[in-house]
Image (cartoon, rainbow, N blue to C red; front, side, top):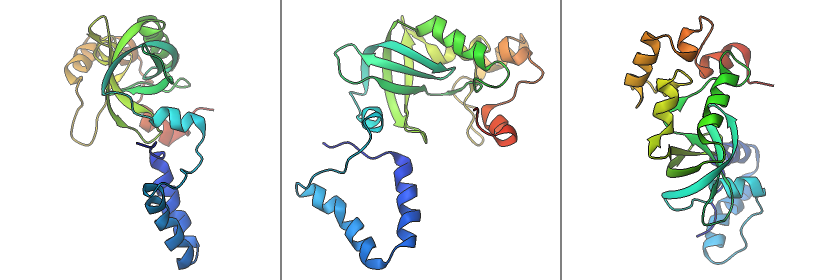
Length: 196
């Protein structure tokens, strides 16, 4: 099975198609049919292809890089491309906001260079796989929230999977829950924009 394009490409394609004549729309719409008939796949940057080439749903690998408090790179133990993953169910501060560096360091201390078990779920808006990650059988997301290094990922009225850990960390004023200037990353980006 071929590689899937980056999810944001679909949004870009819709905007692009509105700008061009209808005959071009028909040509572009026929491209997937041509691919199904054995046509050559479109060229994609290697990083996107590697990020979206879905391995087995659960696998074991080694953490090779920690980007921030909820994003890491994992090399499958059986070989192949390294995958950029976002830990499902948590929302860690951006590295340029209050408690962002501490959050990244906490994740690095926990997983960097460690053998982890990865359970893939879905792809986020940035092309990263959403995954539950376990080190020595322990849920990394639950531990980070319980120690006050991330929030339970809240979506609409759903408080997220780690709401109990978050409540306990807030009661004990652990980590970011003891910081008066701490704010969820989405709110931070709305007020200040993305990190440089």
